Length: 154
Image 1 (cartoon, rainbow, N blue to C red):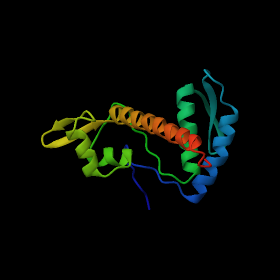
Image 2: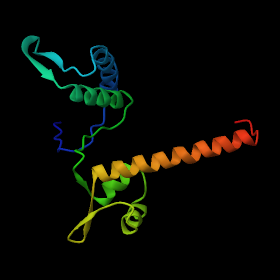
Image 3: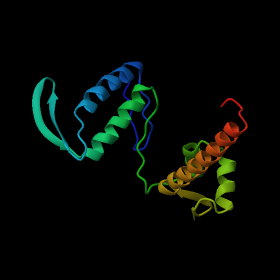
Image 4: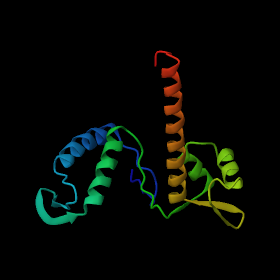
């Protein structure tokens, strides 16, 4: 069976893929140097091919992909300037679609309409997510401090 993949489709690893990703991620990480590109020699059917140079940013992304695949997670690459549907945006934030719509209507997240459909940019979603996570950290730190003051054993 031949499976065709469309650009942006998540890639779900098999168990064999996950094991190979774990092994290759470890090997690749051992060769990563900060602010340096990585030269890689390609082989096809045991015949030596060409040597290519990967930008350091691409190597870091490849390491992240391998790490996620090794954990059995589905992976997709989305450009930061891409626009997502409300369903995709809700999935990225791990919230319900109605909650996301409420955030859009309240102006918490910028969006635009294409006809009757809303579109949300990935970079706006990631900025919102970082902001929410920062606020959560502040609140958790305050709660931990209060627990310490009250000698609650935390």
